[in-house]
Image (cartoon, rainbow, N blue to C red; front, side, top):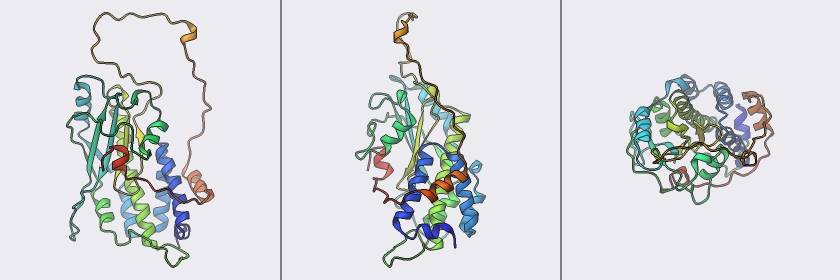
Length: 300
């Protein structure tokens, strides 16, 4: 029996496991998450688990990125300082056998008017996505049309849409979760990982102008995993593109200079660390959250 079948027997056990996984995605620790999920899928040894491991992160790509960069560069007025990006499934999707389900992408571009993206830390951005009433930028996206596509997710996404055991009812207090339910949960997280690794990779290969951060997630799609990509340390300028008049350098007194303390450098986490954290996590009930559509884009 797979170890997660025992842990998922109680709702609290699954919630504790899920909370740890969210922490690693929120912190951008995708290497560790990938190592852990790959090991769990390999141990499961089912057809879908094998399908997941075949779909390696490099197979998934984001297209239309050059057009997004151009749109940010050409935008008139205040600079674009924040981007939200999510994948979702069509709500009226058909369930006929053989139907392929291609997730579409949702894109939002923002200035610093509703929220100071140019000064925000990773933690502050993630915190906004979890706000009860939605993020501060909800409803303030700029009217810019850019169409992105996420290629390479069709196979696993279709398998998850048609999966026969997407729910686990614990009415009779079972001592373990069904193997196929564990398969579904792990495959959902693998789909999230594939998407986030694709966004992470393109943000590194082709950073957005002015290092605009990308808050990426999923809309009405398990597990609603959020991560911030393309973020650089320090402020990211939000000044207008054109400034009238000559530019003058000024000498600032020493009292105006803020020195940052040097933080302790920690060794990067590993999949073994994640496995240990999950096994040691106190089992707490996972709080109910609104869908990512409301939290990131502010629309229901």
